[in-house]
Image 1 (cartoon, rainbow over the protein chains, first blue to last red):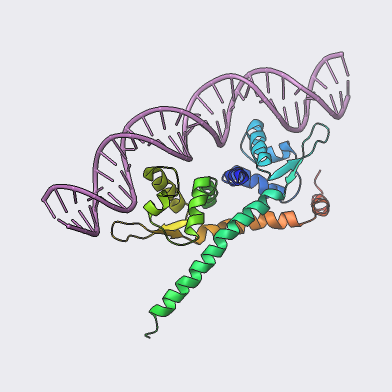
Image 2 (tube, rainbow over the protein chains, first blue to last red):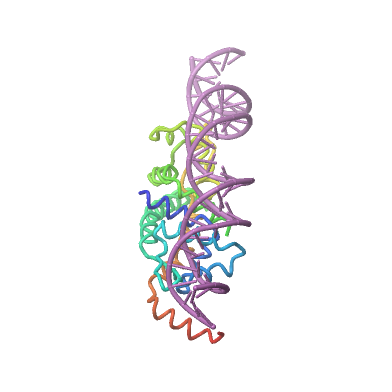
Length: 107
Length: 107
DNA sequence: TGGTTATATAACATATAAGTTATATAAACG
DNA sequence: CGTTTATATAACTTATATGTTATATAACCA
């Protein structure tokens, strides 16, 4: 799944996660997203391009502005993949619990 | 959260995700992990180092072998962070935007 | 129309990632 | 012991990421 590459890679950057956290509060234009960060507008524009490419945000055109908002698809895909790990970890936990239980019948 | 950087970054690589998928089936040594991939042992060793640094796997020492298995902590942290996005996505955007607009009387 | 505003893109520097081969370490084994 | 086996590390190459400044585009406004 090449999409997971892009999605996880996009989420690996703290600035991009902060942008997503901001967008979780609602739509925002590029300049609104630039303002809180100590970074130039082109840098933020490129972060947005990465997020869009990963399917994490969508943008619409409104005059000269490009308001961004969260997109659902990539998160669903990530959740699905992580589910595999989660299930395995639960299984390992059960196994560990079993081992620990077997180890402490004395006492 | 610097840990999220490492965790998401580790998950961005398809080889590392494949390693995790293999470990979801149970513990494996380095050579066991090298075998299915068309890649040299040093390359896999470094992927394992990245996964360990991200808190996604743990290793124990067993003679000359280093069996790896999944670790729970990083996945929990990722889940927690993604929860924020999930909740935002589940919400009706238009209504949320309206609420936020009403909450900001400035300007 | 001409200037300002919002955003994108190009060109560049630097850092980091990911693979390779060669070599080191250290336990196991005969 | 010396050899094999399991793994790690170093040195190197190449590709990609992330930031910068400068500039382009295109809508808006006076």
